[in-house]
Amino acid sequence: MSVFASLVERLADLLQPLFATTATAAAIVLFTLLVRLAIHPLSRASARGQKARTRLAPQLAELRRKHAKNPERLAKAITELHAREKVSPFAGILPALLQAPAFLLMYHLFAGDRMAGHTLFAAPLGDRWADALGDGGVFGAAGAVYLVLFALVAAVATFTYRRTKRQLATQPLDLGQPTPGAGTIAKIMPLLSFGTLVTVAVVPLAAALYVVTSTTWAAAERAFLFREEAAPRALATRA
Image (cartoon, rainbow, N blue to C red):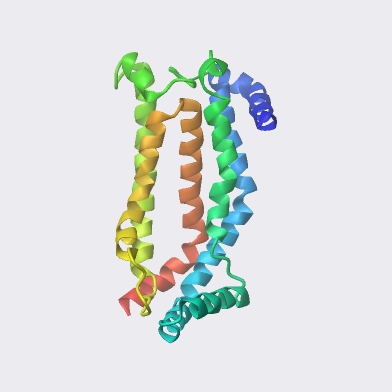
């Protein structure tokens, strides 16, 4: 992680003439964008996998009907189908897993005393929202920075919520054996995007900047990667 820390510090030095005391904050945003850009190929692969799984839904439903009384044969048949179609059921989690070290870097290495003198406008990067509330309140100088972040996160979360709801509504029906709890998961999943608000409120501002930037990138990236299937799905729904 020291390599990542050195990279952020070097970026901050380069951005110092442009951003002055907010150079470290700008470096964190740039670092986050570089991380997201580096794992973009995996995100594209994940999107392809998700589209393939949607395309295979009718075949999976048929396998569940055919092997409803033989779970072992069903599991083997599903594995063979994924292998034949070159679809990985775990591809979607790789981008999130690869971001974990970068987030931990922001949380552990860029909080507290190491952030002394580094701010995002009036808000110290090592402080949390609770510190801003204790120093000027919600509408104080530091509190206003958090209000802007919360507004941005809420906008992105609302966009993601609506998009996820549409995707779940237009997914092909699985006519096979229903998965226990699938209905509850389908209801809760769109709401998970709002959990970022809690994260931003409790982690140091340096880590919050990483979360906000990464979440915004992810929402825009998914909108781009799934744009080509929006029109066909809409037409299919009307039909």
